[in-house]
Image (cartoon, rainbow, N blue to C red; front, top):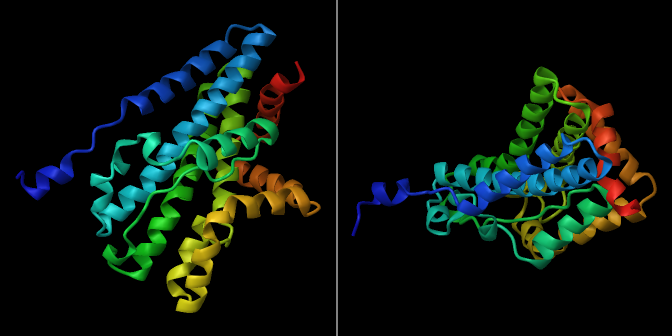
Length: 256
């Protein structure tokens, strides 16, 4: 048997993740061709593939933090390989979020890693694991915003990237809602009474549907979400006007 330290060191990056990165780059390259069809198609490819990349980074951040805080089972489960197949199933956690992203630009939570909470060292460690995923999205949004500002790419590409950045902020905000099953609940869960935590665990699988009801049935909820996300995106260096143009490029596919 190999030493434990060697076993823990093996976390190869999945080729599927590299393909997703390549597809994101290909989408960006398409927007540079100039024609309307290329700009629309490139934007859709960049945003959808880029969202899948960000999903991997989000879940990887949960897993990496868990590993550092005592739950080393995440390595054996493949969560540190950035393989999207480890984080999502085809229906509820992949197709449904992609569908809502395509229809309304709203990124529903799209993946999950199974953490052995008993292996984590403390309640703050459990909270840190939950917080790590949304923070990864916010950092990615900041990197995109600053990168676009510094490199000043052609407008269609800048718009597509900015919309992808705004989606990261939307993901950050949505995931921090204190709804069972979301990361925001996971941050406060360790400090709640056992009965409250047990009850929340029973309804946690229905979190995506709770978000759908909240955003589409509660008047003004969707507008408030985008208002908050726009403001936060600006604070981390993003361009809300460019993101709005990118959103128009993205949704233009549905009007063709």
